[in-house]
Image 1 (cartoon, rainbow, N blue to C red):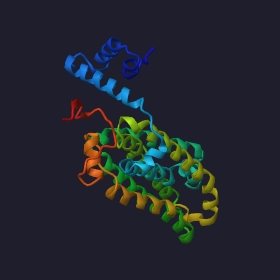
Image 2: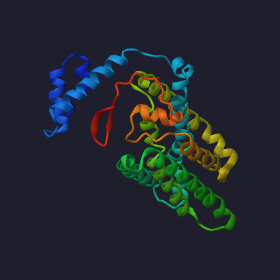
Image 3: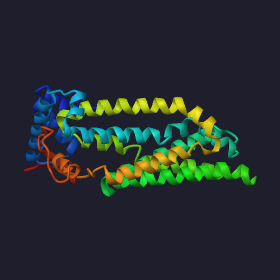
Image 4: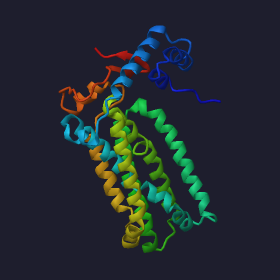
Length: 290
């Protein structure tokens, strides 16, 4: 009842009139006919280009596509190897040591922090920029991992109760993840590619993400057994590397066209790896790049 057809799908089916009516509803009555026509034309051009499918091999062989593809893969690996799923898989142990009568209530608390932090991330993403939030998220997770490790090591060593410091470290860790490494790799990876190669690149990066998630779930029990209270130090190291990678390698994509993003990645040399339509969305309005 509440879900409408995709205007882009309607355009692909040749139903331009219905697409225009739906866009007018979605964009509001203030949207001008010129902007609506421009958006429909852009959708038509993009859909025509997307029929020209490319392979993952092309992403690897083409030097103009290889760098953004490697950035996308690296961000997906950092996202999972940051250890966030390990925290959620085994969070009940933290809350048990903190004295929660029902550790599953602690898991609900972590999930609540997850949702609230994601809402803030959505609000900040188009203000602070993707890159700044990625760096903040990675550094914050590094610090949180160190806090968590300190609590797990110092408590038994000093024979003091630091369970609530562990909880603080876990919740801080989850919050910082959702500020950046959680949602932003998906947004940036899509924005690094033009219309022709985006679907293939996103599919491949999504596959890598799930493989990494599987490996973390598979290996974490063994790592936890081997390292004990120092289990989260490898995650601290990984997120520290992610912060440097995000600062020095990942381009800022907020409010930029694909050509501008390419120019930043390749030192001002705009590439021709994509057959993008030339339209971009900047500051909430659609404009054509000349």
